[in-house]
Length: 196
Length: 196
Image (cartoon, rainbow over all chains, first blue to last red; front, side, top):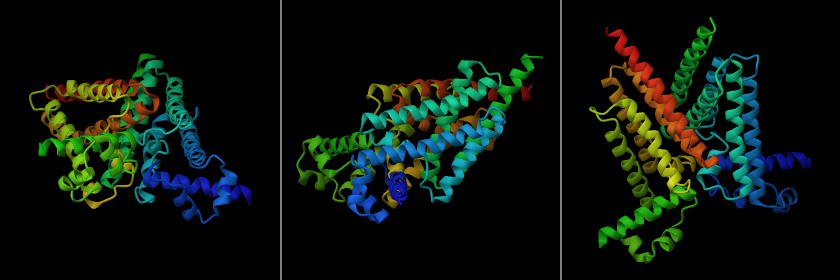
């Protein structure tokens, strides 16, 4: 029961952050949307909005990290992983009515209002790039090339989520997915050729 | 004098949108930052915040469109243009203390609060992609390939601005610029080879 209430607060906050950003997410809205009493919110989150936003952002970041670790696992095909990253991001965005994008984006664009939130955002971006770069090194790419492609991939998906939300169509994610899958195919082919 | 006051309101609003997003930008803050009387704001912008935000976003979008038209002009090198787009975005972000990114992003991520703002955001994304795709078609790329690369480029720069702001370093923009310049070089080489 206690855990359920806590979880519900986190999910409600997460939803509001996606809808209207950090500044547009008020404690009043979180309470109204969750239907829980104010005392319950402060019981679970004595730090108020800041603590709730940190928990919601961490929750979203962990979800993405876990998804990427699965996609880019050592025994998974990295080219299929690039496609899956783009298509899953597009699917979630479209199914939510063009609301659910990256959990870090609304925090970053509202100016990152606390050092703790800053740490969560920085670590998220570094972790996601590292997961992808790790798999690419395993596939034979040199360190700098792997990091560079990982930065391009994370940036392109982040941006495509934004462009897609503006256009209200998933085409940018489809295009980013197929362009980068093709590019990675060529890069891995080059690695293979150089070993022959 | 009238024009100067109007311009100052637009610039102040634009700055606040970059700093804290749509929801974090209040009329009170705009007035405090601009130092102008409230009557003057309503004289120039009878529609209040919505009219001001539309004007500020349009101002930012026009600035980017003009920059891209110059970079991707018919007589300019498209590969140099890709590099210039990334490095200029990175320079402005870093020089502003990691504040100045895309003028459309804070509007999109706060949920696009009016049909007019929606039109501005959608048109901006379409226009930027069209400018780039137009130059790539001129360089010999087929229509779908040109549109696809343009979508990737705009998305990657949008996303790199966000990742760079989270990390407080311009590395993502450097990496996106050099990865995509290399990719375009290979694509244009292929076009040239196919004509031999």
